[in-house]
Image 1: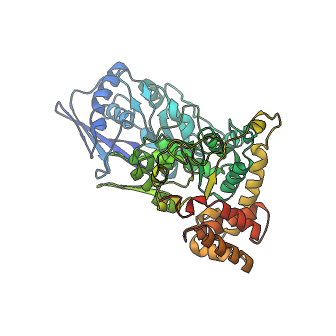
Image 2: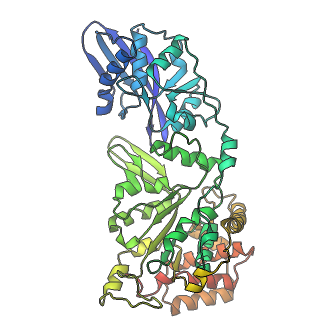
Length: 512
């Protein structure tokens, strides 16, 4: 009779149960079927060495391994342990009565030790959903899998330990993680703080507005003015992750293999800062075996693009759809996977190639036309998706040398949380809308009502400053956030004026 064990494959951020069937008959060869990739086909060599080095024997007969469902491509080395257990059960070297109660995951080394794998968290969620008693995983993946309740997660180090467990000669204690205690003990624990920043009060104000409304922002200023330093502190003023967001974020990082062995649940918002040489696949996700890209790893957090014009134009353009839809779909011939990508985009750039265009003290050394050419590297459609354009000026010596402390991130975060609470109440009936930046055009008309004086101000601003038509909705969204921070039910004229101030790149002649 064929022996069945159960493992799992991850597609996107969801797991699919894989049934591994092993049948041993007369013959001398090994066969593995069910659309295995190269890593899976090579597993029989690793398994043979691991079994022999663990004190067991590899059957010298025909071994047929089937991985069902057979129409899904199986990739990676995470099936090694489940295949090895099935072979030893089929050859009657261990008892097979318990194996159907456990989902088994792990890569085998030649000496029988078990290596870490990717995607233990979504596999654990799937195992609980399908009613398995427990999940056997490498000890390095045990903590991330154990944040799922109501399933025994057994962290193991060697093949021998797994086999002794099934024989009943060794007890493996389930890994226990108090998810809520873990979550609340480390929530919003950031190494940086806005109190370290001298001066730049207007930039802090702009980032506070961005955090309160979930708006994308771009910082434009000369080298050394503090653009990167300010951007890195933005997560410290964002509202803390709720438990659902933390689980979703952890799942993405688990699939990408970005969690350390000591990690269980991500409690701080992600901050990703890819280099400008990144490819479009690395940014958005994909590849021969689709993996989440930087924008998905930034889900529920911040994606920071430093020196924006230095990124390849094709890389920047592929972000346009995810910025609107807040998810990425990677399509291949055999499968299509979805990755969430709800992130805040924060970009920074110099005003010109030398960096000193419009500098208060230094002269720009760029030749005629170079400034316009440099700024036109960032396309209009991408700027259309950025709500706040903030001009950053260098800090003067007096502010830099002052001994006084600036406002802390905790104080700013308190105001941001209060504004977000107003928005949660406002959009409670709307699905997938949690902050002002996510409003549709129809919602903008319904929510962002302005009086006649406000209409006149907006009309004059668009005519006098040469603002584009695409700036209209963005100004209304930002002004709604400014009003929320001011605890105001209606958008007043000063809220509109501040929002207009943050649309410098929409002015005629500024960028192509």
